[in-house]
Image (cartoon, rainbow, N blue to C red; front, side, top):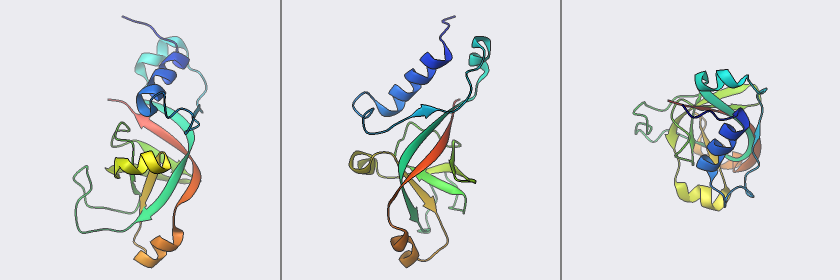
Length: 141
């Protein structure tokens, strides 16, 4: 079996998620302590800290991409390589990736996270788009 260091694994994962051309647009930094090499194969997630373009959205009456109806605590991401069930931590609040945004948004704004809310359309528009530091726990199958 091929053995790879934790740092090498994180770099490969980040290249797969963001590609070489996007590396200058998105600053990523692993936030977990480096585990012993024999625990790498048992890890079920990778954790990165980055700045995202944050927005809010309301329910449209349609299910999210994972098949569930929208709920507070769910979020959509622009990067389709971040699997459903991954966690996005903003401050002390944790959101679960359940939906997708238009990938064109990622080309225009970088990695985008769209938070589901029950607030009014006007309040969502007032919130606007904010560059926000987040921690993303990327789940692996």
